[in-house]
Amino acid sequence: MSNGLLPLEFLNTGQEAVIKEIAGGISLRRRLTELGLVRGSTIKIIRNDNFGPIIISLGDGSGSGRLAIGRGMAHKIMVEEL
Image (cartoon, rainbow, N blue to C red; front, side):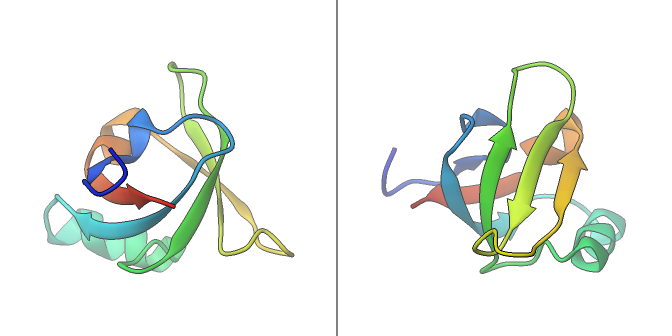
């Protein structure tokens, strides 16, 4: 799916992607914005064990923090793989 959008939860550990849209309500968008997860942000999957939260890093990984994203939230974050 190199040209299509897919939910963040479908990415594997080590993959990078760009956030293209948030398929959720205003409160979810606000919360994700506060965390720095906005359209155009580059993320990298640090850990996705297909259960429990997904661990991601923002940006190029140099000095950026890690976030744990629940599966329900990750399903609403649409990304494009890099």
